[in-house]
Image (cartoon, rainbow, N blue to C red):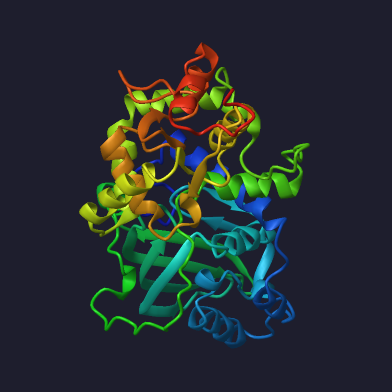
Length: 401
């Protein structure tokens, strides 16, 4: 998906694939939807107050100031330095329009980059003949950690050439180059990052003494997209006040259910690798012992996600049967990523929910592992669930007779 450096004339050694271009535009669309839920960043508002440069020296000085404050990391640049119809180009695409670039820049800094380190390698302004554009060129070594489940670290040399019009003193062309081969870029993107990310090799911070722990990022892509869609009106509120992923996804005939079955049957090893990477380092024996104890601790016990429609439907089925149950929401549990990783190894499924009745694993909501329990919905439909609940003494007194 990565392309080689763009040549001065605009040609590329490698054209990115259609899939890569599609991903770029999809990311832009999602970022714009997310931006509707946020206000304008204060840094951008301050930068926008500056007027157009009056001299070439001022223009170069303000570009230098933009790099000093790492505009591409904080998501705010000196907008008045750029022409309204400035061309912006990178190895994926090119377009005209300052406002579009400013919007994309702010969206990128809105959570996709979780940590960064930047070192300037060079910066220079090339002299130009009378009437020709002045080129201000930078090269930087950039290291980024991305908010993906496996927390990859990206590190390569990133360059930008700003072409300044000699009459208006505005940047009319902004061209990025990434000095990394496609193979190396892909390798970095899909290699799990170390637990301490860019802090590897530094002294670990001392504990603060607080018992509060960060919420595990078990669903860093779909969950935020659904929240954005609901807040922007693309997904309508549900009558029961449910704010998670759409309840309709949990129907046995839904596209989401078919996609879940396909992933479970064809992509099981890939899903397991992803959740293993998200879990990082942990003690498998301790987590296995915890799962064994918790799954037998209540007549009905389930591991769940608080925004998962399949988990919601499983709980509704248990409610309809009059069953008492205990649910542990892994997306708010500090051990959640580790528990999910071990559930994949122990049950053959990394999806939620994972349900036990009387200490017996019965699968998820609509399905279970291949050649294993069929899931609680199938048990309820076949009439096999109620006897299991009675045997486990999971029913309230009104349903025991």
